[in-house]
Image (tube, rainbow over all chains, first blue to last red; front, side, top):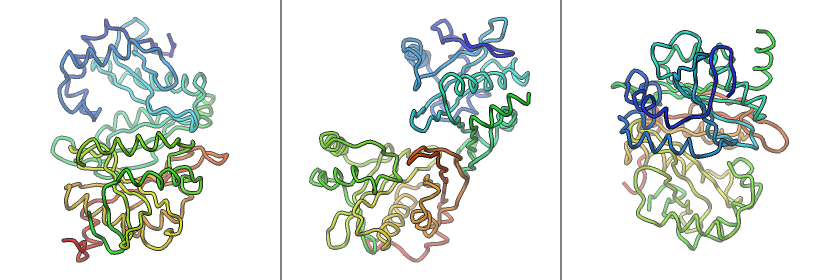
Length: 183
Length: 187
């Protein structure tokens, strides 16, 4: 268990299946995810996906946490992917699927907690993430965590009948350390 | 076979393996590629054979060999991360034969693949990443019409330091505005 201020990060569990399946079929949630989340998710596909995460040991290139409130309510997931040991860089993903828990600082704390884990335990140098321009709530959250907008891929993402930009944000370890010390 | 001005793009063949094997292990060639280690010959053969499991189709990795008009194989160019919903792809190029650097062959191959992507595959956006200190490549991409969309800070570690990468993109209307009236010779 990795403890944050408002949330804890724990290993995924097959008991999380129904919740994950519900979130992956909630268009209000998946519209911000891209990729296969564009379509709807069968229970079987969700189960296969979760089983793979539950059966593999976590390692440098396989980091996946369930996000829980301090009272033990599972509200979403956060992970690192595309991690490279030479560049010491990983890409961060996060989803708060339980919408009643949006805009309460829990996502921000989850990002800060996994970023701290990445820098202090995995020895990363840099963390990046992709976010769509129609998700200002997430962008504000990432800024609060120290992420800087580095690239704007113009008209990169087709969503609800129009093309939108994809923004790449990056965070360097030194900047994160300064932010944490100032806080 | 796609005809251009200085080059043509063709399928990669098993008989190309010797050249790829030499290029991919030449540190001067791979310096700006996402390749760090040496590649065994068998791995290179497997890679080339894997390309022949079926005809080229939209999606996945699409790689062409670049050949000069007099039949000399000098490198390859292709798309990866081809995405049908967003109608976009990411482009990669390697001129492995160093004699053909800085002579316009790379630019010609790029323009040919861009035209193929926009006019045959119906893509809307093509992008690429490039080391910020690879001035020769950046100049070529600008000439093709790519626009710098941002800078990935300290994104790659090589030659003893963390280095920035640029992200560049081109939209189909930008390509057509710039290269109108220069259809490929084969059309």
